[in-house]
Length: 232
Image 1 (spheres, one colour):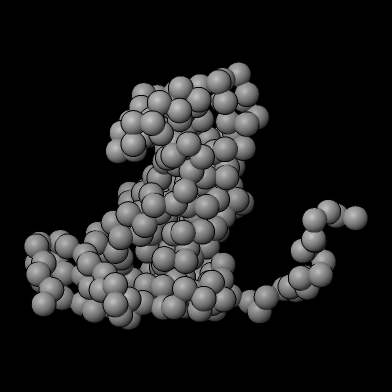
Image 2 (tube, one colour):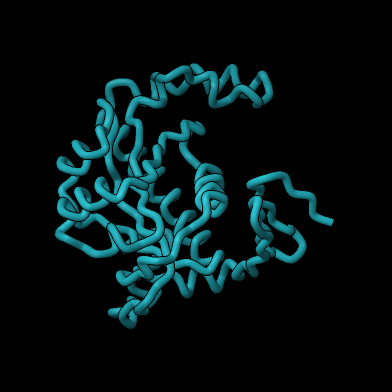
């Protein structure tokens, strides 16, 4: 038996079914196999403007996103959920008028805090064994201090991993997505009031497709991208 409170989401670990309930209804969504989600995920450009993701579905996506790994567990990603239609229009204008910015059910601006490593670092290891805390917490400062490029690289790594988590989770839930870098990052930063020492990695649109993505443009064979021990 499944017991739900108002606005609650659960996953049946044995079947992979996604259960969501709000005060109006109970829905059971069959989740896709992970391998299938990886194969079928595509960058979809055309979305049903009338379809809405529930708050529970958005919360489910973001709850999975924050399980993504980060170096030193600094959890440096920051997710801006853009709900205001006027703000969406402004971002679309800064994104070469790409329709998915306003048409998709969900628009996320994937950002990162470049200085999260120095923001109360003990909080990232509060549940770890004491020995691990003693080693990891004081190591974070010397590892990142004064290394601006490393801080930026770390931000992009973390955002990229979290973005893939979001896109695969969305596909597993029956939705499509589109990661986007085609936008004026300075303008979008201004629109969302990006704080100091933060950076934008990408936008992600999520929703129900009305038109499938084009066939894959051309996949390199493994022998062109996989090397053993050394490049040569």
